[in-house]
Image (tube, rainbow, N blue to C red; front, side, top):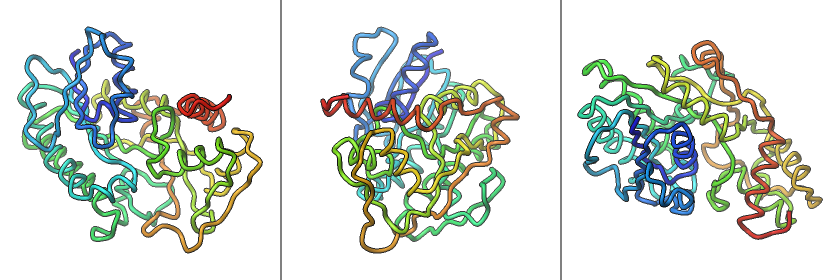
Amino acid sequence: MRILITGGAGFIGSHLCDRFLQEGHHVVAMDNLITGSQDNIAHLAGNPEFEFIYHDVSNFIHVPGQVNAVLHFASPASPIDYLKYPIQTLKVGALGTHNALGLARAKGACFLLASTSEVYGDPLVHPQPEVYAGNVDPVGPRGVYDEAKRYAEALVMAYHRQHAMDTRIVRIFNTYGPRMRLDDGRVVPNFIGQAIRGEALTIYGDGSQTRCFQFIDDLVEGVCRLLRSDYVDPVNIGTTREVSVLEFARIVNKVAGNDAGTVYAVGSRIDGDPQTRKPDTTLAADVLSWHPQTELEDGLDRTIRYFRAVLRLPA
């Protein structure tokens, strides 16, 4: 197949490029590099089956030739990014999704949307199944990302129903691994960056907030299985091992060999930060026969080794 991946120079997008190239497909990565990086795809330079197009998908998309699948992964994804680029985040969720759908329709291609667990907001149901409609504040600071993704999902389903398009929606839960940015503001790179520098890990709030962290390889496998399936409605992809932020900090310190411990930041938890987040992955197991394979400690070890190599720190 010839596959277009928007956001192809991003953390997740670049790993998808690798996977599809390994499977023998031709990959076109499209990115405006607001939050993505050429470093993530530098190893693909010279590969005749790989193309890179520098482009903002909020503008009309033109890709000459055949396209068999469009995977729309373009969007700022961390709070520090979408709070810095609120309008761009809304535009890529609305205009970008519209343009990517238009291209897929013109090419007769399958379309897959990267959505997010943030569509559930600060959930009142735990764990969160796909049928849960969410508890989202549309005018809060996180609303620019939450509502962009909720609108994108609605647009995808409208194209599916109105134009009989072949579409997929993956709701991605907290994912970590190599190629994350140390400065992207999320808890995994924050903690790892502090741990490998021998610093105390900063806890916001009381540390009782819970998350489930999945390794990038498991997410990529889930996305590939979903693309190959014929399932149209949203599917959660994430691990169900739930840990508090405080417990997670202790695990990171242990894996990194950091004895500096933790320190609490002054003030309450970040505004709008969900207290709990855990996917119900029954659907992924039933429809895709998908289960996460990577233990948290193993994934963290691989990620820590990556960041130490990037910063040229001793292993």
